[in-house]
Image (cartoon, rainbow, N blue to C red; front, side, top):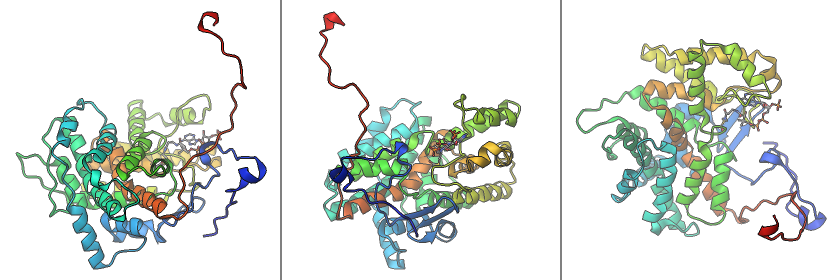
Length: 406
Ligand code: ACO
Protein backbone atom coordinates (compact mmCIF):
# COMPACT_ATOMS: atom_id res chain seq x y z
CA UNK A 1 0.00 0.00 0.00
CA UNK A 2 3.01 2.30 -0.36
CA UNK A 3 3.76 2.52 3.39
CA UNK A 4 7.42 3.45 3.80
CA UNK A 5 9.52 2.87 6.92
CA UNK A 6 13.10 3.10 8.14
CA UNK A 7 14.21 -0.17 9.70
CA UNK A 8 16.20 0.86 12.80
CA UNK A 9 16.47 -2.54 14.48
CA UNK A 10 20.28 -2.27 14.61
CA UNK A 11 20.49 1.48 15.28
CA UNK A 12 21.54 1.34 18.95
CA UNK A 13 24.04 -1.47 18.35
CA UNK A 14 25.66 0.30 15.40
CA UNK A 15 25.49 3.98 16.42
CA UNK A 16 24.88 4.08 20.20
CA UNK A 17 21.78 6.19 19.51
CA UNK A 18 18.14 5.43 20.15
CA UNK A 19 15.16 7.35 18.72
CA UNK A 20 12.77 9.50 20.77
CA UNK A 21 9.16 9.78 19.64
CA UNK A 22 6.61 11.03 22.20
CA UNK A 23 3.29 9.22 21.79
CA UNK A 24 4.89 6.98 19.10
CA UNK A 25 3.46 9.26 16.39
CA UNK A 26 6.21 8.22 13.95
CA UNK A 27 7.04 4.78 15.27
CA UNK A 28 5.87 1.53 13.71
CA UNK A 29 5.78 -1.00 16.54
CA UNK A 30 5.27 -3.95 14.22
CA UNK A 31 4.57 -5.11 10.69
CA UNK A 32 0.95 -6.26 10.44
CA UNK A 33 -1.30 -7.77 7.77
CA UNK A 34 -4.63 -7.14 9.49
CA UNK A 35 -5.94 -3.61 8.95
CA UNK A 36 -5.05 -0.82 6.55
CA UNK A 37 -5.83 2.80 7.45
CA UNK A 38 -5.17 5.72 5.10
CA UNK A 39 -5.73 8.70 7.34
CA UNK A 40 -5.34 11.28 4.59
CA UNK A 41 -7.97 9.72 2.33
CA UNK A 42 -10.24 8.37 5.09
CA UNK A 43 -9.88 4.71 4.07
CA UNK A 44 -10.23 1.70 6.40
CA UNK A 45 -9.91 -1.93 5.24
CA UNK A 46 -9.87 -5.19 7.21
CA UNK A 47 -7.69 -7.83 5.48
CA UNK A 48 -8.13 -5.85 2.24
CA UNK A 49 -11.93 -5.46 2.40
CA UNK A 50 -13.49 -2.00 2.74
CA UNK A 51 -15.09 -1.63 6.15
CA UNK A 52 -18.19 -0.03 4.62
CA UNK A 53 -18.78 -3.12 2.49
CA UNK A 54 -18.21 -5.52 5.39
CA UNK A 55 -20.63 -3.48 7.51
CA UNK A 56 -23.27 -3.78 4.79
CA UNK A 57 -22.79 -7.41 3.80
CA UNK A 58 -21.32 -9.36 6.75
CA UNK A 59 -22.27 -10.18 10.24
CA UNK A 60 -20.00 -9.53 13.21
CA UNK A 61 -19.02 -13.19 13.70
CA UNK A 62 -18.03 -13.44 10.03
CA UNK A 63 -15.96 -10.26 10.39
CA UNK A 64 -14.33 -11.69 13.52
CA UNK A 65 -13.32 -14.81 11.58
CA UNK A 66 -11.91 -12.64 8.79
CA UNK A 67 -9.84 -10.54 11.19
CA UNK A 68 -8.53 -13.48 13.18
CA UNK A 69 -7.90 -15.96 10.34
CA UNK A 70 -7.14 -13.58 7.47
CA UNK A 71 -9.75 -14.79 4.95
CA UNK A 72 -13.53 -14.69 4.66
CA UNK A 73 -14.84 -18.08 5.82
CA UNK A 74 -16.59 -20.63 3.60
CA UNK A 75 -20.14 -21.53 4.68
CA UNK A 76 -18.83 -24.61 6.56
CA UNK A 77 -15.97 -22.76 8.19
CA UNK A 78 -18.37 -20.07 9.37
CA UNK A 79 -20.85 -22.57 10.78
CA UNK A 80 -18.07 -24.40 12.62
CA UNK A 81 -16.75 -21.11 13.99
CA UNK A 82 -20.23 -20.05 15.18
CA UNK A 83 -20.79 -23.46 16.82
CA UNK A 84 -17.45 -23.30 18.61
CA UNK A 85 -18.13 -19.79 19.90
CA UNK A 86 -21.68 -20.73 20.99
CA UNK A 87 -20.39 -23.62 23.11
CA UNK A 88 -18.58 -21.28 25.48
CA UNK A 89 -21.09 -18.52 26.27
CA UNK A 90 -21.75 -19.58 29.89
CA UNK A 91 -19.59 -18.36 32.75
CA UNK A 92 -18.45 -20.60 35.61
CA UNK A 93 -21.17 -20.25 38.28
CA UNK A 94 -18.49 -19.20 40.76
CA UNK A 95 -17.92 -16.06 38.74
CA UNK A 96 -21.32 -14.72 39.85
CA UNK A 97 -19.74 -14.24 43.27
CA UNK A 98 -17.22 -11.88 41.70
CA UNK A 99 -20.03 -9.74 40.28
CA UNK A 100 -21.85 -9.81 43.62
CA UNK A 101 -18.83 -8.26 45.32
CA UNK A 102 -18.87 -5.11 43.18
CA UNK A 103 -20.65 -2.02 44.53
CA UNK A 104 -23.77 -0.99 42.55
CA UNK A 105 -22.15 2.21 41.30
CA UNK A 106 -19.10 0.42 39.83
CA UNK A 107 -18.41 1.49 36.25
CA UNK A 108 -19.12 -1.43 33.87
CA UNK A 109 -15.71 -0.92 32.19
CA UNK A 110 -13.99 -1.55 35.53
CA UNK A 111 -16.15 -4.65 36.02
CA UNK A 112 -15.46 -5.85 32.47
CA UNK A 113 -11.68 -5.59 32.78
CA UNK A 114 -11.72 -7.27 36.20
CA UNK A 115 -13.95 -10.18 35.20
CA UNK A 116 -12.15 -10.74 31.89
CA UNK A 117 -8.91 -10.80 33.90
CA UNK A 118 -10.54 -13.35 36.21
CA UNK A 119 -11.14 -15.70 33.26
CA UNK A 120 -7.47 -16.62 33.68
CA UNK A 121 -8.45 -18.09 37.07
CA UNK A 122 -11.29 -20.19 35.70
CA UNK A 123 -9.85 -21.18 32.31
CA UNK A 124 -6.41 -22.40 33.33
CA UNK A 125 -6.41 -25.10 30.63
CA UNK A 126 -6.17 -22.42 27.93
CA UNK A 127 -3.46 -20.10 29.22
CA UNK A 128 -0.44 -21.14 27.18
CA UNK A 129 -0.17 -18.97 24.04
CA UNK A 130 2.51 -21.25 22.60
CA UNK A 131 0.16 -24.25 22.56
CA UNK A 132 -1.99 -24.04 19.42
CA UNK A 133 -4.96 -25.94 20.88
CA UNK A 134 -4.99 -23.85 24.05
CA UNK A 135 -4.70 -20.70 21.98
CA UNK A 136 -7.72 -21.68 19.88
CA UNK A 137 -9.77 -22.58 22.95
CA UNK A 138 -8.88 -19.27 24.61
CA UNK A 139 -10.02 -17.38 21.49
CA UNK A 140 -13.42 -19.15 21.41
CA UNK A 141 -13.87 -18.62 25.13
CA UNK A 142 -12.97 -14.95 24.92
CA UNK A 143 -15.34 -14.25 22.02
CA UNK A 144 -18.16 -16.23 23.64
CA UNK A 145 -17.91 -14.95 27.20
CA UNK A 146 -17.33 -11.26 26.54
CA UNK A 147 -21.04 -10.45 25.72
CA UNK A 148 -22.13 -12.45 28.77
CA UNK A 149 -19.71 -10.57 31.05
CA UNK A 150 -20.68 -7.22 29.48
CA UNK A 151 -24.41 -7.83 29.96
CA UNK A 152 -23.94 -9.22 33.51
CA UNK A 153 -21.98 -6.11 34.47
CA UNK A 154 -24.99 -4.01 33.45
CA UNK A 155 -27.52 -6.24 35.22
CA UNK A 156 -25.37 -6.12 38.35
CA UNK A 157 -25.28 -2.31 38.24
CA UNK A 158 -29.10 -2.03 38.08
CA UNK A 159 -29.83 -4.84 40.53
CA UNK A 160 -31.62 -7.10 38.04
CA UNK A 161 -31.10 -10.87 37.82
CA UNK A 162 -28.59 -12.11 35.27
CA UNK A 163 -30.14 -13.40 32.05
CA UNK A 164 -28.26 -16.46 30.83
CA UNK A 165 -27.12 -16.71 27.20
CA UNK A 166 -29.43 -18.49 24.76
CA UNK A 167 -27.36 -20.21 22.13
CA UNK A 168 -30.14 -20.42 19.52
CA UNK A 169 -29.77 -16.62 19.13
CA UNK A 170 -27.17 -14.79 17.04
CA UNK A 171 -24.23 -13.04 18.73
CA UNK A 172 -25.97 -9.63 18.68
CA UNK A 173 -29.45 -10.96 19.55
CA UNK A 174 -27.98 -12.84 22.47
CA UNK A 175 -26.29 -9.73 23.81
CA UNK A 176 -29.45 -7.61 23.57
CA UNK A 177 -31.48 -10.36 25.21
CA UNK A 178 -29.00 -10.65 28.12
CA UNK A 179 -29.03 -6.84 28.48
CA UNK A 180 -32.74 -6.12 28.33
CA UNK A 181 -34.77 -9.26 29.08
CA UNK A 182 -36.14 -9.86 32.59
CA UNK A 183 -37.44 -13.24 33.83
CA UNK A 184 -40.92 -11.86 34.52
CA UNK A 185 -41.69 -10.52 31.04
CA UNK A 186 -41.45 -11.53 27.40
CA UNK A 187 -38.71 -9.58 25.65
CA UNK A 188 -39.61 -8.34 22.16
CA UNK A 189 -36.40 -7.72 20.29
CA UNK A 190 -36.38 -4.91 17.72
CA UNK A 191 -34.74 -6.30 14.52
CA UNK A 192 -33.56 -2.78 13.60
CA UNK A 193 -31.56 -2.67 16.87
CA UNK A 194 -30.00 -6.04 16.12
CA UNK A 195 -28.91 -4.79 12.68
CA UNK A 196 -27.61 -1.50 14.08
CA UNK A 197 -25.61 -3.30 16.77
CA UNK A 198 -24.15 -5.72 14.24
CA UNK A 199 -23.06 -2.82 12.06
CA UNK A 200 -21.59 -0.75 14.89
CA UNK A 201 -19.61 -3.73 16.20
CA UNK A 202 -18.15 -4.37 12.73
CA UNK A 203 -17.13 -0.71 12.40
CA UNK A 204 -15.28 -0.91 15.73
CA UNK A 205 -13.67 -4.31 15.09
CA UNK A 206 -10.10 -3.18 14.38
CA UNK A 207 -8.01 -0.11 13.78
CA UNK A 208 -4.32 -0.97 13.57
CA UNK A 209 -1.93 -0.17 16.40
CA UNK A 210 -4.23 2.09 18.45
CA UNK A 211 -3.69 2.56 22.20
CA UNK A 212 -5.70 -0.47 23.41
CA UNK A 213 -4.44 -2.82 20.68
CA UNK A 214 -0.88 -1.76 21.43
CA UNK A 215 -1.61 -2.47 25.11
CA UNK A 216 -2.83 -5.98 24.21
CA UNK A 217 0.32 -6.58 22.15
CA UNK A 218 2.61 -5.05 24.78
CA UNK A 219 1.19 -7.14 27.62
CA UNK A 220 0.90 -10.25 25.43
CA UNK A 221 4.53 -9.93 24.34
CA UNK A 222 5.62 -11.16 27.78
CA UNK A 223 3.84 -14.42 26.73
CA UNK A 224 1.05 -13.95 29.25
CA UNK A 225 -2.32 -15.53 28.40
CA UNK A 226 -5.03 -14.05 26.14
CA UNK A 227 -7.44 -13.18 28.98
CA UNK A 228 -4.87 -11.06 30.85
CA UNK A 229 -3.82 -9.36 27.60
CA UNK A 230 -7.44 -8.49 26.68
CA UNK A 231 -8.10 -7.22 30.21
CA UNK A 232 -5.20 -4.77 29.72
CA UNK A 233 -6.70 -3.68 26.39
CA UNK A 234 -10.06 -2.99 28.06
CA UNK A 235 -8.32 -0.77 30.65
CA UNK A 236 -6.53 1.16 27.90
CA UNK A 237 -9.74 1.62 25.95
CA UNK A 238 -11.62 3.17 28.88
CA UNK A 239 -9.76 6.52 28.79
CA UNK A 240 -11.60 9.55 27.35
CA UNK A 241 -8.92 10.12 24.69
CA UNK A 242 -9.64 6.64 23.31
CA UNK A 243 -12.82 4.54 23.54
CA UNK A 244 -14.12 6.46 26.55
CA UNK A 245 -14.73 9.37 24.16
CA UNK A 246 -18.16 7.97 23.18
CA UNK A 247 -19.48 8.40 26.73
CA UNK A 248 -17.60 11.70 27.17
CA UNK A 249 -19.07 12.99 23.90
CA UNK A 250 -22.68 12.44 24.99
CA UNK A 251 -21.86 14.07 28.36
CA UNK A 252 -20.45 17.03 26.44
CA UNK A 253 -23.50 17.32 24.17
CA UNK A 254 -25.81 17.21 27.22
CA UNK A 255 -23.74 19.92 28.88
CA UNK A 256 -23.97 22.17 25.79
CA UNK A 257 -27.71 21.51 25.47
CA UNK A 258 -28.30 22.39 29.12
CA UNK A 259 -26.19 25.51 28.68
CA UNK A 260 -28.66 26.98 26.16
CA UNK A 261 -27.04 25.37 23.08
CA UNK A 262 -24.25 27.92 23.29
CA UNK A 263 -22.08 26.36 20.58
CA UNK A 264 -19.85 29.43 20.18
CA UNK A 265 -18.82 29.25 23.85
CA UNK A 266 -17.67 25.63 23.53
CA UNK A 267 -15.95 26.14 20.18
CA UNK A 268 -14.03 29.03 21.82
CA UNK A 269 -13.13 26.83 24.78
CA UNK A 270 -11.88 24.07 22.43
CA UNK A 271 -9.76 26.65 20.54
CA UNK A 272 -8.26 28.07 23.74
CA UNK A 273 -4.88 26.42 24.41
CA UNK A 274 -5.14 27.43 28.10
CA UNK A 275 -8.46 25.60 28.48
CA UNK A 276 -8.27 21.78 28.84
CA UNK A 277 -11.69 21.42 27.14
CA UNK A 278 -11.63 19.50 23.84
CA UNK A 279 -14.44 18.62 21.49
CA UNK A 280 -14.93 14.97 22.36
CA UNK A 281 -15.40 12.70 19.35
CA UNK A 282 -13.31 15.09 17.25
CA UNK A 283 -9.77 14.65 15.95
CA UNK A 284 -7.66 11.55 15.42
CA UNK A 285 -3.98 10.63 15.42
CA UNK A 286 -4.26 8.99 12.00
CA UNK A 287 -7.33 10.46 10.26
CA UNK A 288 -6.73 13.88 8.76
CA UNK A 289 -10.00 13.50 6.88
CA UNK A 290 -13.54 12.41 7.75
CA UNK A 291 -13.40 9.09 9.64
CA UNK A 292 -15.19 6.59 7.33
CA UNK A 293 -16.74 4.91 10.37
CA UNK A 294 -18.29 8.18 11.56
CA UNK A 295 -19.88 8.67 8.11
CA UNK A 296 -21.63 5.27 8.26
CA UNK A 297 -22.64 5.73 11.90
CA UNK A 298 -24.17 9.14 11.15
CA UNK A 299 -26.28 7.58 8.36
CA UNK A 300 -27.44 4.84 10.73
CA UNK A 301 -28.49 7.50 13.28
CA UNK A 302 -30.69 9.11 10.61
CA UNK A 303 -32.15 5.76 9.58
CA UNK A 304 -32.85 4.51 13.11
CA UNK A 305 -34.44 7.76 14.27
CA UNK A 306 -36.58 7.99 11.12
CA UNK A 307 -37.71 4.35 11.39
CA UNK A 308 -38.71 4.85 15.00
CA UNK A 309 -40.41 8.19 14.31
CA UNK A 310 -38.14 9.86 16.84
CA UNK A 311 -36.16 13.06 17.00
CA UNK A 312 -33.14 13.41 19.23
CA UNK A 313 -32.14 16.92 20.33
CA UNK A 314 -28.60 15.65 20.97
CA UNK A 315 -28.32 14.39 17.37
CA UNK A 316 -29.51 17.76 16.05
CA UNK A 317 -27.00 19.50 18.29
CA UNK A 318 -24.15 17.17 17.27
CA UNK A 319 -24.79 17.89 13.60
CA UNK A 320 -24.83 21.65 14.23
CA UNK A 321 -21.62 21.36 16.22
CA UNK A 322 -20.00 19.40 13.40
CA UNK A 323 -21.00 22.05 10.85
CA UNK A 324 -19.68 24.91 12.96
CA UNK A 325 -16.39 23.10 13.68
CA UNK A 326 -15.80 22.03 10.08
CA UNK A 327 -16.12 25.70 9.02
CA UNK A 328 -13.87 27.03 11.76
CA UNK A 329 -10.24 27.78 10.86
CA UNK A 330 -8.92 26.16 14.10
CA UNK A 331 -10.42 22.77 13.17
CA UNK A 332 -9.79 23.18 9.42
CA UNK A 333 -6.09 24.04 9.91
CA UNK A 334 -5.55 21.07 12.23
CA UNK A 335 -7.64 18.71 10.06
CA UNK A 336 -9.93 17.81 12.96
CA UNK A 337 -13.02 15.83 11.87
CA UNK A 338 -15.64 13.75 13.71
CA UNK A 339 -14.24 10.35 14.68
CA UNK A 340 -15.99 7.03 15.37
CA UNK A 341 -17.06 8.21 18.84
CA UNK A 342 -18.89 11.38 17.78
CA UNK A 343 -22.20 9.83 16.68
CA UNK A 344 -22.08 6.26 18.07
CA UNK A 345 -23.64 7.32 21.39
CA UNK A 346 -26.72 8.56 19.51
CA UNK A 347 -27.35 5.02 18.21
CA UNK A 348 -26.93 3.59 21.70
CA UNK A 349 -29.39 6.18 23.08
CA UNK A 350 -32.05 5.12 20.58
CA UNK A 351 -31.46 1.49 21.57
CA UNK A 352 -31.91 2.34 25.25
CA UNK A 353 -28.34 1.49 26.20
CA UNK A 354 -27.21 3.50 29.23
CA UNK A 355 -24.27 5.90 28.89
CA UNK A 356 -21.89 3.96 31.11
CA UNK A 357 -22.20 0.97 28.76
CA UNK A 358 -21.10 2.84 25.61
CA UNK A 359 -17.40 2.05 26.00
CA UNK A 360 -18.28 -1.55 26.91
CA UNK A 361 -19.92 -1.80 23.48
CA UNK A 362 -16.76 -0.41 21.92
CA UNK A 363 -14.80 -3.14 23.73
CA UNK A 364 -17.21 -5.80 22.47
CA UNK A 365 -16.64 -4.57 18.93
CA UNK A 366 -12.86 -4.24 19.25
CA UNK A 367 -12.42 -7.73 20.74
CA UNK A 368 -11.79 -9.62 17.44
CA UNK A 369 -9.20 -6.99 16.48
CA UNK A 370 -7.39 -7.39 19.80
CA UNK A 371 -7.46 -11.18 19.38
CA UNK A 372 -6.24 -10.98 15.78
CA UNK A 373 -3.26 -8.82 16.81
CA UNK A 374 -2.42 -11.01 19.81
CA UNK A 375 -2.50 -14.08 17.56
CA UNK A 376 -0.54 -12.42 14.76
CA UNK A 377 2.16 -11.47 17.27
CA UNK A 378 2.40 -15.01 18.64
CA UNK A 379 2.59 -16.54 15.16
CA UNK A 380 5.33 -14.14 14.03
CA UNK A 381 8.75 -15.82 13.74
CA UNK A 382 10.51 -12.75 15.19
CA UNK A 383 8.33 -12.19 18.28
CA UNK A 384 10.23 -10.34 21.02
CA UNK A 385 9.12 -8.88 24.31
CA UNK A 386 8.07 -5.22 23.85
CA UNK A 387 10.55 -3.16 25.77
CA UNK A 388 11.00 0.46 24.66
CA UNK A 389 14.04 2.48 25.68
CA UNK A 390 14.05 5.91 27.32
CA UNK A 391 16.16 9.05 27.25
CA UNK A 392 17.12 9.46 30.91
CA UNK A 393 16.85 13.12 32.02
CA UNK A 394 17.21 12.75 35.81
CA UNK A 395 20.07 13.38 38.26
CA UNK A 396 23.49 11.97 37.62
CA UNK A 397 25.00 9.96 40.51
CA UNK A 398 24.88 11.74 43.90
CA UNK A 399 25.70 10.97 47.54
CA UNK A 400 23.00 9.58 49.81
CA UNK A 401 21.74 12.05 52.48
CA UNK A 402 20.73 10.42 55.82
CA UNK A 403 17.15 11.14 56.95
CA UNK A 404 18.31 13.30 59.87
CA UNK A 405 20.11 15.68 57.52
CA UNK A 406 17.29 16.18 54.97
N1 ACO B 1 -10.64 19.55 20.31
C1 ACO B 1 -9.87 20.64 20.25
N2 ACO B 1 -8.59 20.63 19.81
C2 ACO B 1 -8.08 19.47 19.42
C3 ACO B 1 -8.84 18.27 19.46
C4 ACO B 1 -10.17 18.34 19.92
N3 ACO B 1 -10.94 17.25 19.97
N4 ACO B 1 -8.08 17.25 19.03
C5 ACO B 1 -6.88 17.77 18.72
N5 ACO B 1 -6.88 19.12 18.96
C6 ACO B 1 -5.78 20.06 18.71
C7 ACO B 1 -4.71 19.97 19.77
O1 ACO B 1 -4.96 20.87 20.80
C8 ACO B 1 -3.46 20.32 18.98
O2 ACO B 1 -3.47 21.72 18.78
P1 ACO B 1 -2.06 22.52 18.71
O3 ACO B 1 -1.36 21.98 17.51
O4 ACO B 1 -2.45 23.94 18.60
O5 ACO B 1 -1.35 22.20 20.00
C9 ACO B 1 -3.73 19.67 17.62
O6 ACO B 1 -5.16 19.64 17.47
C10 ACO B 1 -3.17 18.26 17.49
O7 ACO B 1 -3.68 17.51 18.58
P2 ACO B 1 -2.87 16.40 19.36
O8 ACO B 1 -3.43 16.29 20.73
O9 ACO B 1 -1.40 16.63 19.20
O10 ACO B 1 -3.28 15.13 18.50
P3 ACO B 1 -3.06 13.65 18.92
O11 ACO B 1 -2.91 12.88 17.66
O12 ACO B 1 -2.00 13.51 19.95
O13 ACO B 1 -4.46 13.25 19.64
C11 ACO B 1 -6.72 12.66 19.93
C12 ACO B 1 -5.50 12.61 19.01
C13 ACO B 1 -6.33 12.12 21.30
C14 ACO B 1 -7.79 11.73 19.37
C15 ACO B 1 -7.23 14.10 20.03
O14 ACO B 1 -7.66 14.54 18.77
C16 ACO B 1 -8.35 14.26 21.05
O15 ACO B 1 -8.07 14.46 22.23
N6 ACO B 1 -9.65 14.15 20.62
C17 ACO B 1 -10.75 14.19 21.56
C18 ACO B 1 -10.94 12.81 22.23
C19 ACO B 1 -11.48 11.79 21.27
O16 ACO B 1 -12.43 12.02 20.53
N7 ACO B 1 -10.87 10.60 21.29
C20 ACO B 1 -11.29 9.46 20.48
C21 ACO B 1 -10.33 9.23 19.34
S1 ACO B 1 -10.87 7.93 18.30
C22 ACO B 1 -10.54 6.54 19.22
O17 ACO B 1 -9.62 6.44 19.96
C23 ACO B 1 -11.43 5.48 19.08
